[in-house]
Length: 526
Ligand code: GDP
Image (tube, rainbow, N blue to C red):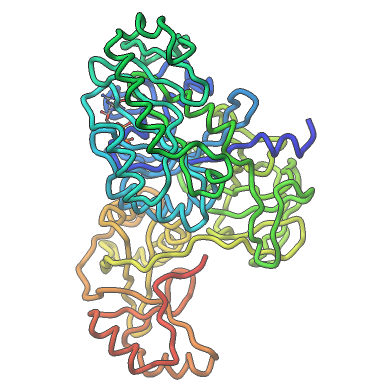
């Protein structure tokens, strides 16, 4: 198969949802269809006691939340699918935002009883930054849930995206009978109690087919016919272009727990979701099918395999092909690296690959030289634009329980900051070490990792910082002048950027008024 064919069959996506909507359960069924697991029910450690392949961190096992991001690659029909897992917990949302820069489409999972929830709204905003095409799966139809029409209305209203139902549910709860596919005019019948295996599809062709009445009962068949008339009049028809522009979402109904409907969604994904798209490389647009390999790092992760204790940089290939032994230039530093031992994630095996293509994710062993946002090419100077750092809202001062470990602390925090696990600030005026986070759980994770990976025992103390802003000026001179004047409130972050730490919002406002030439940024490009 030619490289272009390989690239065009890639489908790289992530799942966005509010906690508990069913992301883990759906991931499990997707892996079942991808032949990555033989029997569903083995992914999540929370209930079964068996730990998921993605549960790498001790912390995660203890808390039963997904802190890390993992990659799962598998063939489905004619496509090669890459599913990028995202942490479910809101405290790790930055990780999720960054992962969303590395996908070409996303699956939005909605709990049919709850409708649109807060996290989903946030994640949709992030997807919208790049107009990522969104598929929707409305889950838990095996329960008594809300009227599907109402749920679709809510999605359109709140998320401002058009909904095009591809399937429509027949009944719900105990009387969930299956779905009807509007595009193929076929009903697919549901049988409960088969959630752990792939079910053979039982289908009835044609909405007016009397067999449908027999299969689901004539009341349900009639109700379906009536509802569909309404639905077809009121909702949007599927439109491939509008989907690919991120304006319209094909909607599927089902129950992940009952393993029903997930395959319909996967069919839609491989058929309609785009293959790797051109990306903005700073200097120019880079097409996925170009010969030369390019890519960028969206995630750095430590300790994936406790036996190796290595740090892995996840690189999304944007164009061309990775071949074992390839020489790549790290554009930020200008250094060349020969990559002989990249990891791939095909079929769940963490193995050394010979080849990978645009759309795929490869893992590079990182000894502290690779940062999030780094662009790699075969020589050209490019810079893929990514999602920025967000100004943290929570701050703590780090206090060492063993003062002799200061060096290890600094090293550990710089590395954890590079990974995006936390943000770290070193005030100019003293030797304090200040951590910034978006969610409180991040602090616990950092303390646990400092101890486990760097042998540093520390605790936190409150500090009066209310917000941070990265500062920029038009010239070095202006910046130096500002540095002298605002010295007491300034710090350097883990990447050495000058940062203003404001004790109060009012203080920030005053500083901004006093220094109109200085830009106080809420985000920093990485
Ligand atoms: P996540 O937090 O989004 O990963 O959600 P999970 O996949 O862990 O699901 C949350 C809870 O909802 C779990 O108890 C699941 O068993 C349950 N659940 C997931 N899908 C379904 C479904 O289709 N029907 C029902 N009844 N429960 C479901």
